[in-house]
Length: 410
Image: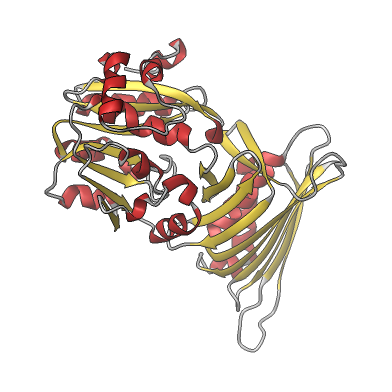
């Protein structure tokens, strides 16, 4: 009997109009997303309603699943959709598949506003007010967290933005169904993204962050008193606005720091057009399978190389080596074809559910060669403190790679 029931109410949708009024188009979408999620179709029924006062009627449909059901109704005159997915978890945990199915259909409709709810059914031990959200590591593996409150859910011009609150993670940012950063845990990622390369550089003065609208990487970067200017370019101004209003525990006001220049725009275009040179470039991006995909290409890496000052370095995260080995190999190979040195490193990041790969790439800088004594000296001289993960001993440990990870690298 135990199962997961997900519902979503979509408003002011901007997706293809055919899936609002054409039952064949809607059915094809729902079948495709159901099959992609790994759930099992055993039957279906679709009905198109007649026109009303000159407006096309909506479509109601249901797909019967071996695991339970999907139900949907469209309201074309309002650009609205009501959607629910229920799966039984009696013999197998189908929660991740249900979440993937819901997310796929929502993405097709492109709602401007969205309300989501979740109900754990038939489980007396589950907290009644905690929403369990799953995220995919690859098509075969998922992980998840319980969130006690949903603080914000909105569709920006580019993506669906959510703020959630968890006992373990605190306020958490989620974009297009992917967990990005959380106030109690962000130091794992942000400190490791910023400090290995920045400490290794003998005198970093000018830095560029592409993405990173939450301000967490910027905050870490500005801890170095050698940094005279830090430019941050993020595509989505609403992420920056939400970060300023709700994620102060992550960015500590860095987005308004006088040494910071915060720009809204396309990072790829900025890199092509800027005449500035940077000692450190941080690619604080969403994953390659997101709209940030074009920024994980050899052509873009070559553009980034052109904006590096002499002795400069770029930092990028590569993904999870155990769950995404092909991606690690591809990106590492492309980076190696552009830069003389690719210094791969890694750590476990709780919010991302896995050991995570990163790399410092440069034609001169090799951070793994820096001694712990020199790391300590530079941190002290630059006034870098209040660190929760990174320290002189950890610097070297980050570059000590597990054998399976080493074998993925060119």
